Image (cartoon, rainbow, N blue to C red):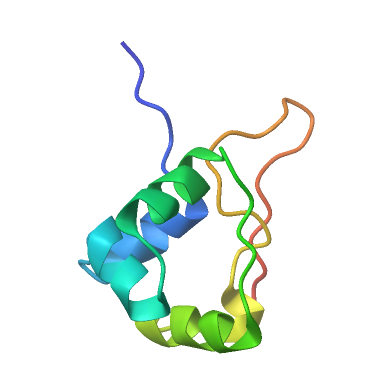
Length: 84
């Protein structure tokens, strides 16, 4: 049984030892919303303030924020993570 790879958002969140609920609280959304972003069920619609809070909570710069938070990607389109 293969495990689905972690999404970029899930990986960053776990590196900070945060739960979905904790991250959601930091940026003003629910833990369920974070889970849906990580599964690719919905695309995040963040305000500039929420984006800044997300970067701060994850300990990353805006340039390091992934373009796509989901773990599921079309076969021909691998996940994109912006690198400094």
